[in-house]
Amino acid sequence: MTDTQPLRRSVLAIPANERRLVVEAADSEADEIVFDLEDSLAPSEKPRARTAVIDAITQHEWGKRRLGYRINDTTTKWWYNDVIEPIEAAGADLDTVILPKVRTAHDVTTVATLIESLEAAVDRPHQRIDLYVQIETATGMNNAVDIAQASDRLSALLFGPADYAASVGAIKGAVDYPGHYWHYPLSRVAHAAASADLLAIGGPYAADPGGFRAACSYERALGYDGKMVITPKQIATANTVFAPTKTEAQRAKQIVQHYREADPDDVVSIDGNVIDKETYRMAQQILSKAESAGII
Image 1 (cartoon, one colour):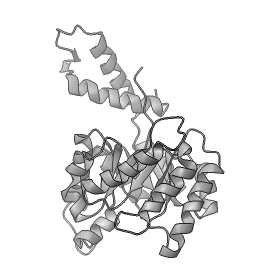
Image 2 (cartoon, one colour; image 1 turned 135 degrees about the horizontal axis):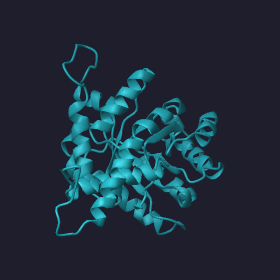
Image 3 (cartoon, helix red, strand yellow; image 1 turned 180 degrees about the vertical axis):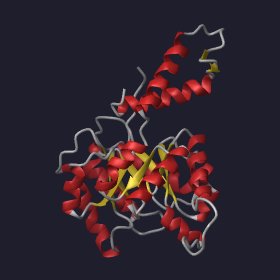
């Protein structure tokens, strides 16, 4: 057995002030639920929505599902109270805070320091609150590696395609682009995340179901661990694509067992293929995901 970790194949983002969506989220199979205080809300709704986040967290049964919320970015007047109010009222049940539009490592350390101060005043029965950050500006993309290394509270980087497109002036569909439109930013975020041993999570996709599956498959091929979804209809696809297949899981289990049982002084191989430390480490990761997903 390996040490299993919580999955983030599907991170369902919903506005907390939409009661119907909250109920649907509670009944869904999403690995994590994120209540949004940013893009899905008009400026006049934002302060009141903090109360909706608290109510959604404390008045529904979420089981073992991870819960988080997305604050407004640090250039706004809302972010400070976005952090304080939900954590003070519902911090014992929170797993994640998502910080959008991160530009520099300083954005990360500012929010991380505030969360650390709040945690000291909140009775938390389990591990500390994780911080996810969204890379969705040109400046943030330039600083992605520094951002990924900014705090040991970080556990994931997310790519935000819509705001990134606006930041660089990209116009998708204007021409027949030769290649995958988001290959560079997706790869850069994946590399930055891997350099700091963080998860990489893809941004939302609002187009057709076939395109969504293709987007998930492409991101998984680049090393992504999951995707932010915007409707429960996308959850099953994300959960399937970002989980190992049974064949992959069985192969990973074979590699892990063979490597552990081998003499440390011997060259370890299976079917003529050498198993080095990196192969073993990758197999451990696959096996952990498979065990968490109930595949093996």
